[in-house]
Length: 310
Image (cartoon, rainbow, N blue to C red):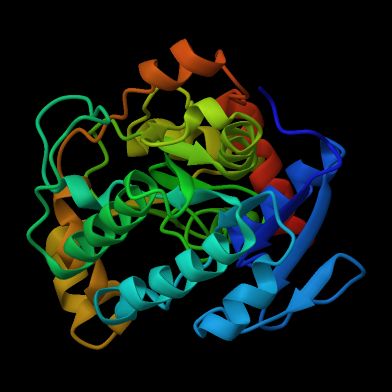
């Protein structure tokens, strides 16, 4: 069974990069949408503080599907993510809605070989433990019958509107300005990268298909790229003389001494110094190949967005 187009789809964190993309995808598919955030604007929008039970219940009221794309500030995941998830579950349960969680890969910790959804939650660092706890809270709520829920997982993302990502301004805005584009991590290791519109398409497909419930899915994605390969595509789109560099662990530590955002990258450096590859076989077997934009096209569209917003 596929969700009917008359049903209300609610996007939490609708002004963030993933939330914005999910809202656009829902509209493109003809769904009725409510876009929720603290500073939401527009006819489909609702301002609400979903860190409170009252705010979450108001945000989710009348929904058939809720997309949880909101998150605390990166440095506060360990302290705040579980509490946010608890209030979101309260809102979803009150509405009798299905929940689709926009998830990542932190819970797995360091891995050998391509990642599948049956890996244990082995992360032993604060953000990874927090993401593992959040995923388990959602799956437990499903098992207990409180909500029907599914999780869609993606790797590092890039795309139009993707500014708070290692694949954002330091690569695309820099290239658009003719400056050095910097890849975070080893330049020669294959790394799965997700394109924002493809993430949104994958999440909405989960939202349309109740058979997705009760488990996590790795969203469909293109083949991994090395940093060298990704930056070559960026400069092919940008034109001009390529200027590329990698940000290695030593430089990350040095810059992190006075830049808290860069310092936070140290926790997940294992994702950046070795192969980091997602296996999306299960999703494709269940729902088809889905939307996977060719890397060259995705990079060109992202660069064009950064050029327009320079």
